[in-house]
Length: 430
Ligand code: JFZ
Image 1 (cartoon, rainbow, N blue to C red):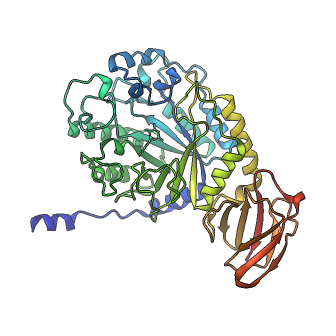
Image 2 (cartoon, protein in one colour; image 1 turned 135 degrees about the vertical axis):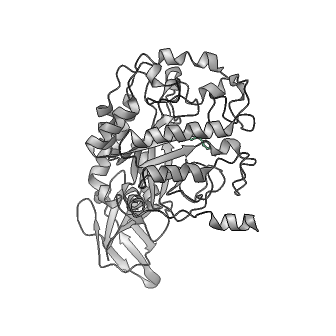
Image 3 (cartoon, rainbow, N blue to C red; image 1 turned 60 degrees about the vertical axis):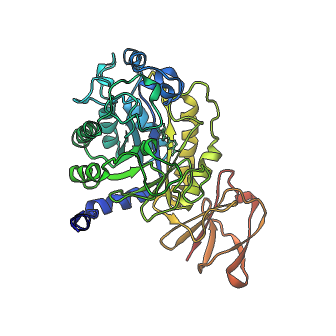
């Protein structure tokens, strides 16, 4: 009876008015830059290298002397994101190797003790605020470095040479301390992006949140919302949103497609975000040349928008502090696309039909945008269950010939000269 009362008293999260406004702004942004960068970048073998190569903590620590990104310039990075049409940056503040990319009072394992010394999180956050783009922080729940992280129950990090037993109370306090730093010393933070929950799952396909430890999300989330009520919380747990979260993310998957084979890909009611890599890696990887083409990137962005989701596109900068030219070039091409077509993507909602093989639909106010990504026929029939008065090519404004048939079917006569190799957009006016 006491327990029942206690659980009734446990408060359900009620987002503040600032938070609801921030959700709406986030839901209008549609395109952001993910940045995986830190000590692991030095090895050029991805951000999982410590775990994958079973590098012991005492050996991995040597990266602290080696990480010296002398060519790093926050202004250049933020400029690259803005030029690509991105509205926010989600930066790794601390990944699974536990290395803090910011000045922290709670650990010696971080950027402050490299030859570089500078607080790159501060420099990027300040530059984002200056250039008017939002800054978001990725923060790993999983830690391969600290002895108090419950690695005995986790799946990864076992080869890293730890001897002490975990102590979750101590680890939780550490995370709270660092999150407090991140939310009090870096100005307005738009989202906190958690990752690592899956390290403690009993069963990857169990949607009941059966984690081997109680992460105490209620305590972590309420701390964040107390420090910055507008800050949106997301968690890469591949489950339906947990109480206290403000957006739902889909790693390497479009909402509802479940192509990654991960569990829990149902769509909840919160703003959506999907993330993908520009080549095949999150962290800098010198062997990875599988760059996505501008066309593939535009397809992904438009299809995400067709689901009503943001696209968080990742770059893994080099250890010297530069973003490699192959990334910069491709992002610039997407930026050229967004300069023309941005208004058919920003601030839109998913359209009357989910993305299809031929492309996707977005809507805004009295406008419906048909994005013909793969459609090749000049006579094109589609069912459009909304009444519309006019149809024109978005780019040129030229009218599109069409004929309305029964049952909402419409046949468009596509003029080949009006096609755009990336995305032919037809604007319907309701
Ligand atoms: C995680 C990280 O491990 C990775 O390094 C990167 O930061 C990415 C964005 O997120 O990757 C995951 C997370 C979850 C699963 C797989 C990879 N999962 O649930 O199978």
